Length: 153
Image (cartoon, rainbow, N blue to C red; front, side, top):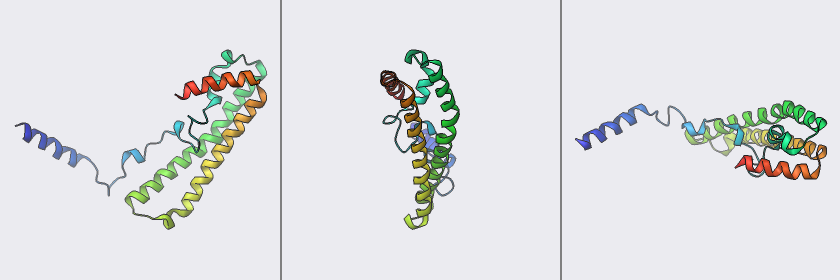
């Protein structure tokens, strides 16, 4: 009885699952841009989000808080929109390589586009970090880094 039940479960699972030819594997299609970047957040943490949420702990004055608010309005448009496009492009490339058997020659121009998008997003993120560094004291920035690294883990 146990063997028949196990066999039935296996057959049901096989019939319910799409074949590789029909649909790409779900893991390749998941979009979660928070941890998606050219330089991973564990190495280049999202300090802007931390600065916004921890302004009191950092002792930011009103001008510094205003800058953080402005950056919170700008940076996601500059960084996240590019990363979202890059992530979707990367998933499409992976799908074409894995399931459509495309080679490097077939995807070369899309690889160039992927590199461009990730680089532009990273440059925008670095520019944001630099603007924060210029606006707050070194002690505030050290504290911000400590908080941002803790948030990343």
